[in-house]
Figure 1 (cartoon, chains in turn brown, cyan):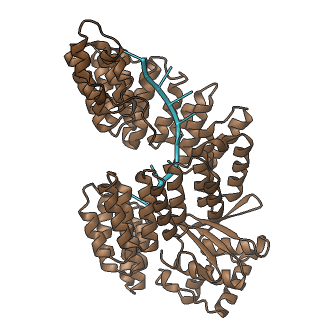
Figure 2: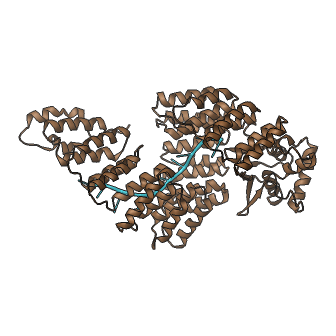
Figure 3: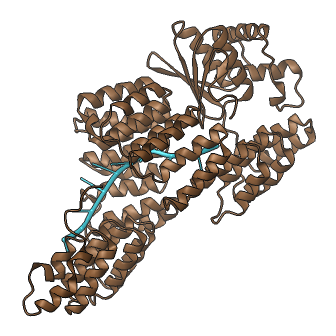
Length: 605
DNA sequence: ATAGGGTTAG
């Protein structure tokens, strides 16, 4: 712990100062000078009681100073306190409103910033260029449900001629992006004549957060072409776009760029590099970044814990956590997310439970929806399906469809059709537009041979107008990304790639590969056709393309948009064995490293 | 006295 620059206020013995020098106030007896030395809310309250004794409790300057302090590092209790003080000011001006709004916009209850705005208008005060950034930021952090308010603020800013203000612009872009409308954000961006780097960062981040990495990177390119100097934040967004794409070559290129322009001195950039290398399939590079960086903070450790977890090394993730605690760093909610994720993907149910417990009891972190999600995953994967069902049902907060979906896919892998039906009802109450749910249900029915149920769910899906997301796998060869969709070529089997895949399947069959046709749910299809549908799954097409177009012995890296299918998983294991190739397959939730006929996930996924 | 852009379970 760093030694505090000043002794804590409690040691000042405030009352003595007051009684000894009530005629003249020197530095230590004036509450104003004490506030600047204040370290915590508790100390602040002591200063406040001191102010009461010196009859300064309603002094405008003292109150504003106190409010300023409370809003610097907003927590729930400090904002509550700020509001109490605020209510004591008879005629607050716009500056004070701005201070309060800024505090709320960074707190857990950003909606209060909007409520304040209503008060501003009731007071007949005019919002200024300092007002809008805080309010827009509040909207951005509330997501899609705040879009209406955000638009109203936008209109207001236009009316006052503040929409092109250099501070307002980026927050407008950020507001639209945060409220899930990145296209509106782009419209705002395009209207700016001379966008600064912060506006560029806002739009690049917006695209990255909307999972549109190509557009994010093209904005990054535009920024370079315009000779605008990027900042460390630009690098973070560019790296997160690479992570989304899973493009290791592009990631390496950006890493070089970062080194060239000296951005590698930022801890956060290094953390983003760890994340990028891990998500692009190179755990080794991620480790080397971590080992070589100085000033590792909680986020850097968390990124490394998540990296080990996604690559199937749960035990290593846990030992990283223990090491981090030894280094006296305090874990945050993301650290625990990584840790719980590690436990669920490694089947460590008891450890998962105990970390979930100490997270609250020892570190005072309130579990969020994502932590609950990890717990559901933990129980579900381990086959404790009914326990998982009860867990979701008894949550203190409203479960999202994603939570139920986690359980649904576990029902699928554990072949529990009855529970799956119950779970699907719970999902459909909340959201019935997700194609994957119907696919899981009809697959389960198909495996149980209940073809009439298969038809039922497929009809339900059609009636509700739900479309299935096609499986898509991509592979990068010589800086070009090749995409393959499931079923590509089922009706026009002619290309060299398909012929190669046909040959490959023959070879695989000789070493014991049996196509798992129960996964194909077309009950009316004859055997031959079923096998062909399965054969042209996107992952098999991409791996075959990799075998043909990369040097022997090199690693094949494939990225898939959905979870890997069981049949492709067993095929990939055999391919790694007979062609002596390492295959790194990233699916929507984790990595599979196929080597010597085995997978790093230990078939637990 | 007040203002902008950043990693996150399935």
